[in-house]
Image 1 (cartoon, one colour):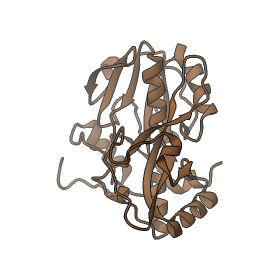
Image 2 (cartoon, rainbow, N blue to C red; image 1 turned 45 degrees about the vertical axis):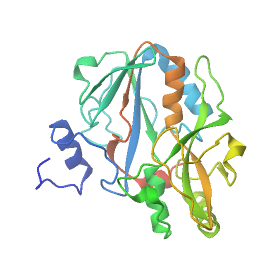
Image 3 (cartoon, rainbow, N blue to C red; image 1 turned 90 degrees about the horizontal axis):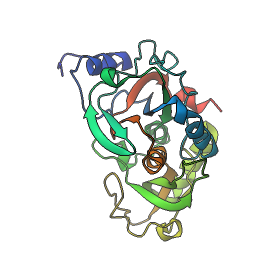
Length: 266
């Protein structure tokens, strides 16, 4: 990475990514600007998957409608966004199995591909900070712990999954503030789905998340669980479509949209 490069603007980060000057995780970049997870599917799979997402918005919230087949420009998220180049790292899956990771998908692009963009938990982290709540996940080096729960999604055709939940340890007072922030903001994934006893949602050991790094609940804190768009990736793995592209974990699309825009959009 060019040490003189600006990290204060989303377009500057995207340029570095496209030029190959940065290929790492995007967490911690330009707080206040929305980052999103991306899943790209053939048109033949897109309608069923879209209905699955629409039926499970607490864990699979799309921030914009799916693209038209073959369209790789995302002007609604940033004027220069080309989905083939602007993620730091992509995963290529065939029949649900990871076959390759790469830094652009030009050679894999097809005219029948449809792109889905999902909200991430980073937007809510930024809002919590405005309420004086700084969960450990605010640290750019600490991804939230994620657990596969026993809460079933609504299935659509071959797409099904148990909900994946992200955990933040909060005090009771901070939990009340977080719920107030979620209610007022209407940000995706802002309202918790469960708090308190993990066993009630099928989580047996908080020290062993399925994804991410464990966080310890200190004295006076409760484990609080929110929905995660990783659920959509789990549904993809189970459905095993013949071809799929998605961002590698923690390598998100940095957009020009501000979190505030999500907060005022129903």
